[in-house]
Length: 157
Image 1 (cartoon, rainbow, N blue to C red):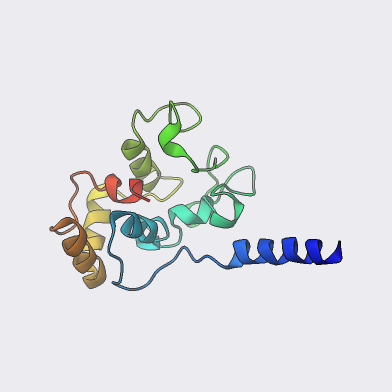
Image 2 (tube, rainbow, N blue to C red):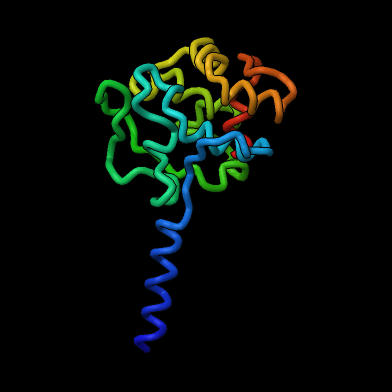
């Protein structure tokens, strides 16, 4: 019995700490890999303090552990952050269904003044100022980051 409990405990530790959701290199070769990197990218927030992963915490099933998440400048969000697992199977996005597609949903928190507070045009500009992101976008999409469908990159993850 002790052996089984020990195995379960070790598996839980591995699951919690064995996966890293932040990558810091250009070895990324897929859209999903780039989306994963963007999911943890803090330059997509106005003050570079939060990323999608700040509220959609990977070790908590991509949800938050508090009633209201903390956005830029310490602002509290208006709602609880739901999990983003299995998003492609959902009939609506956000608690109130205000996004009609997953791609639209992925851009709204970036622009929201309480969450990440950054206009999409500025987010694209920041990505283009990064040598690493310019290389990754060129390698994976054959073009530099653009405002046309930037959410599809996060959506891929």
